[in-house]
Structures are given as structure tokens and as C-alpha cells.
Image (cartoon, rainbow, N blue to C red; front, side, top):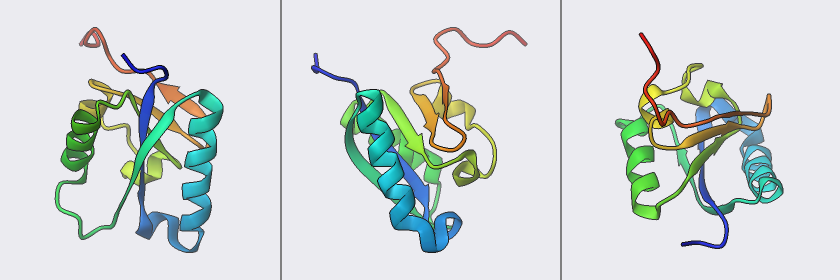
Length: 107
């Protein structure tokens, strides 16, 4: 077992634009403040094939507990349900944690 939970960062360079470095720094800062070991930050663009599947693969390989993103805009404005099933999703702005679904939501 790890001494602290781990996370990966994720952002889309086309959404961040000129503030990409700032967004990456904010991901690192929030991870540190919340006690996460930030294993890696994935930077994709609109040309990236199946980005959510790639994020899930990275989560699995790194055995990470969370994904930290600058905002939900980096996921197209919506919380990706298939990611929320396997990891907490944390946004920098507004700062929010979407806890993984241990029990599927009622329909």
C-alpha cells in the first residue's frame, strides 16, 4: 500500500491554450495541497484518439486514485461517467471532487 494516494493530471492543450503551463502548475499545486502523489500529467489535443480510454489506461497502469483537471471543459464540459466509476475526478476551477461511484447510481 502506498503512503499517500496517487493521481494523474489531465488537460487538453487546445482548451488551455496560452495558459497551459499555468494549468499544469495548478494541477500540481492542488495535488500537493490535497495530499496526492501526482504520478503523471497527460496532455492531449482534439486529434487524440479516444482520450478517455487513454486516461483510464493510465489510471490502471499507474494504479492512481484520482484524475485532476483544470475544469470539466477539458472533458468536453461533462463528467465522464466511465472515469467516475474507477477514480475520483477533481477539478481545479471550480475546486470540486467528484467521488468515484462505488455503488452505481439509481436510475
